[in-house]
Figure 1: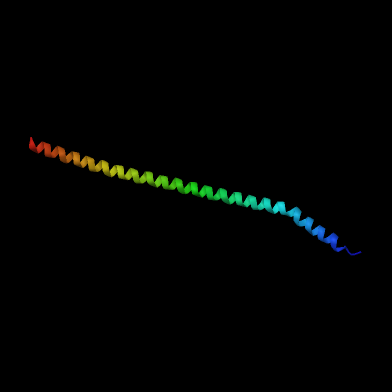
Figure 2: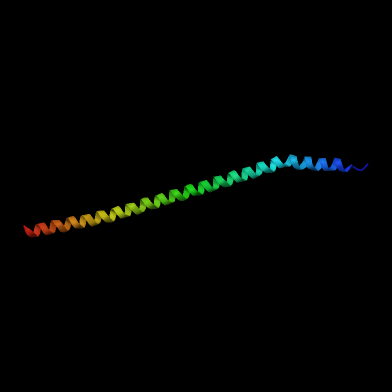
Length: 83
């Protein structure tokens, strides 16, 4: 009443063959989810870098504006002294 070796080996082979696509699907799903996570993080980092650049450009523009206003004031003072 013992199973023959050929019967048990084919059952084992069939069992692993049936589970292989499931494992592959899980691996694929994990790969897709990790790729999605990486893409999301990269997008967030790019947005943060763009925001920092905009802030830096805005601060630079304000400094240049103040410098130009001071230069204009100096020019007006020099012109008023000469008249």
